[in-house]
Length: 149
Image (cartoon, rainbow, N blue to C red; front, side):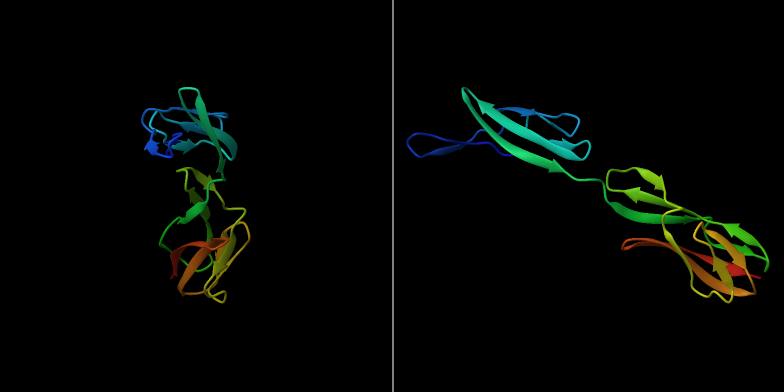
């Protein structure tokens, strides 16, 4: 954030480094003495900058972390026909957290005549060949290869 002081003569001055910063809800966001805010959880917080007897306030809205990638494991398997493989989808979010998404993604086999896969990520191999197993959540897709011997 930037704090700009406007004086009675119309002049302005950057007060960012000298202002006292505060967040009304530190469970939503914290703010440093330099005016750098960090989101902690979804919600809103009033961020204020105070210089002397003058205070400016604005609202900061923190949204939920967004899904950025999906990792499908086990990766690049090679199995005999008739073998089942249980896949796991792990989502990585913008806040650095990882979440097991196995039961909430959409699972797909690139060739269901070779390998079928359930909504729980259980793949059943039918005959020889190579397929791509993918897990999708919204617009984010993760995939791996499965070779059936």
